[in-house]
Image (spheres, rainbow, N blue to C red):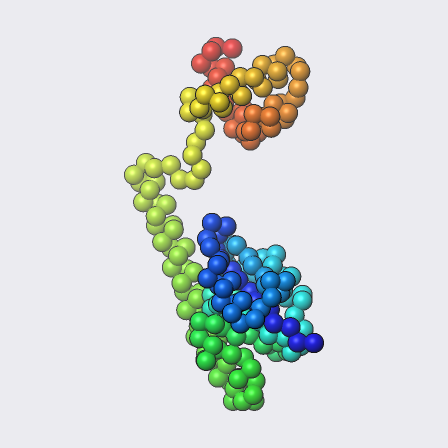
Length: 212
């Protein structure tokens, strides 16, 4: 029995996939056949994509919003597209331009359709790959610029003197229990809500300030 699937990808967990989801549902994709990844498109090691890959069978149809939702790596995008449409025998429709990118139409055209599909796919995959490289270049330039201005890159640094009242009270309570051998260091930093490295960093600063 032919199944209709939808694949959605956004680049991070805080991005909203509702627009893509609405488009899939408008095409009749049931929620149980909708696969959503909230990760970068740099490779295909994505949990939901891999589940979709294992689920599809010959004659199935997969909707995607655009080619870059499948991925941004030029060679891998072409490889995955051909795996689905030629090895498995399923079809892909890109909603961004479904008049042009519907593998069913290429299939109906035989050898000429396959040649056209290869050409269009190569062009769009190249564009997606270049966009990924552009994003990475801009990120690197932004980080380098921020470093030159002395800005910290990454998570905010946590130090003893930056703790708020609640964090400081929690640290002191767990620190005293740890020093009294009432619990292990692991129990202490877990109870206080710190990572291991942050815990020992704060301990060192606290002991230096209080000459312990």
